Length: 297
Image 1 (cartoon, helix red, strand yellow):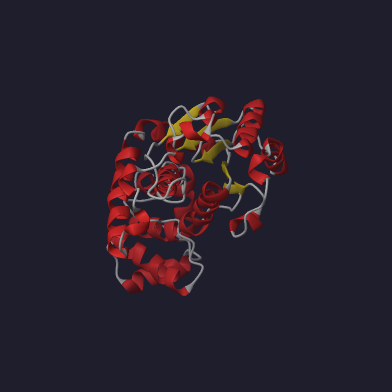
Image 2 (cartoon, helix red, strand yellow; image 1 turned 90 degrees about the horizontal axis):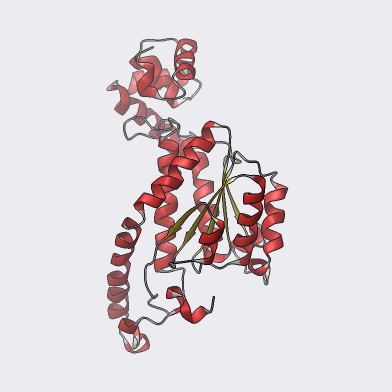
């Protein structure tokens, strides 16, 4: 596909005099363009939902979610994967972000890495991809060889394949069973896909990781009950979550938090069902981790 046929590479006729505008006019224009992003994502909600459901099924089978991308797309995948660990207390291997050129590419461009389809395959082989995993290829242009190589290999293994691009009829969509195409239109700065395209990708990744974690019991009401209390702020947040979930006092929440070995979800079930730590843990096992279902045990 020629670059001049990609929406992400075309010039935005609303910003042809960008270099003549005042700073105030530039940020106002950017804000106007950014408003279009959420509406573009809205059009793809059915496709996004299908991918999220596939991720949930994968997690239930012990599978993983693997983000694959280059440049901004790869960095956004790494970011979303990293944030799943403290938010939902998952193992770092459960949601992974792989970027063309490795982790050094997070801050420094690695020449030629994104143009290697072989490298995409090798990165998946390195983590021992299985048929239970979901591979989500991310590329604003929809044509990155690194991503195509990864999706091709994932299909050969029998893993579930999905893609996220910002062009319609994207090339990577042909290699994915579950394609997502969010067309946000030309960037304010021609070809700078870290702008609207990057924002759209971040919104979609937020949806996929959050909804899939909800789908495996990582949330009760609208509370992150599997938060990892890894610092003082998160310890206090954990106690507050226990209070909000159970309507108990700070003292009760602190006591239950300590008794539950700082497991927020266990502490909540202990209070809601008047159980010991061991009983609460068993209820959670029987309820597959869903707090709401423990109240019927």
